[in-house]
Image 1: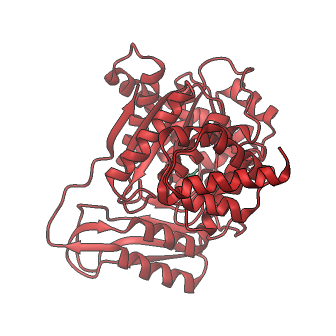
Image 2: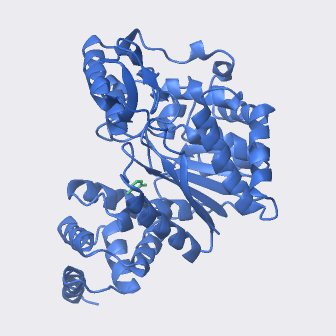
Length: 442
Ligand code: URA
């Protein structure tokens, strides 16, 4: 095809989508692979993204988008790892330290967990940032180191290599600049392309729903979940999708080192009950996918046992040691980075906690220095928030709602205001929302 013919074909594809037509697999493939290889200018991809954002993408088109994104780079070769390889992914939340607990739990259950994670952006936190608050811990592993560690101790948690789904990185940046981030087909293709490229046999996606999540209501979360599930099936992977609540932070800690300390508490069989319950439920969903003959009840029991008998904690210790971290933090949390200032956020009145704007809590943590607005921002691992009052709790005037951990007086003051405004205190006691709303599984 000549350059002129190619330009005309690209224009035809954009026009067809603008007019609401369903595109073929080869049309979508051409756009994505040409864009990833710098053969398609930003302005044409931006036009396509906006057309498909407004007109929508069918399931077949979204599967084609996912395939093309996977094929824009390399896939991880896990053939040297024996046993069943499992992976999990969260669509992003506030105080979501589930991966830190769940990965060692799964390995303690005898599964292999090659986990590639991301960094926090905006109001959501990222697993890599949390782990890097452990002195010495590295998340930059070569593929060989990563595979060897999974084979030896059952799990590794590292950053994604640059040659894995390069199209996602480029398209995500363009979505960010063209108001096309919050499209369900784009989010589904972005998440699943990375999970497929990581090559695990079993994939669990935790779709967060609520005020601290991308998906604000159950209808949106269901649409995304059904799409994620169908994409996974089209790639012949065992997939489950859990829709879980994010109308308040998970556990009590929000902020990198604070969340590591709380995850370690959970691994010791202690810590907040919602964190433990979610990790046990998610672990059981994966165990049931792998071992269909075991009942849900048996899977729950097994998942709880690895927390209570210390075996998951021991896997976590091995992960920290293998990745260069100071494992003494497990026995002495004071060795983790600590903020200089601790300030209470007092309740302005008596009543019950009726709502928490969870994204605002994430934003407050970011303002303290615990998150980043732009990718290149550096973060302060020590700062964050500890939540004392959660949905449905009774509170008295002046009692603390939360404590801000800060290294800067001005930022502490801004964060306190944001947190105080994030709480809605009323006269009615509503029950706390259930933690797992729905599960789609095969
Ligand atoms: N998480 C991703 O990996 N991609 C998106 O587009 C949104 C959330």
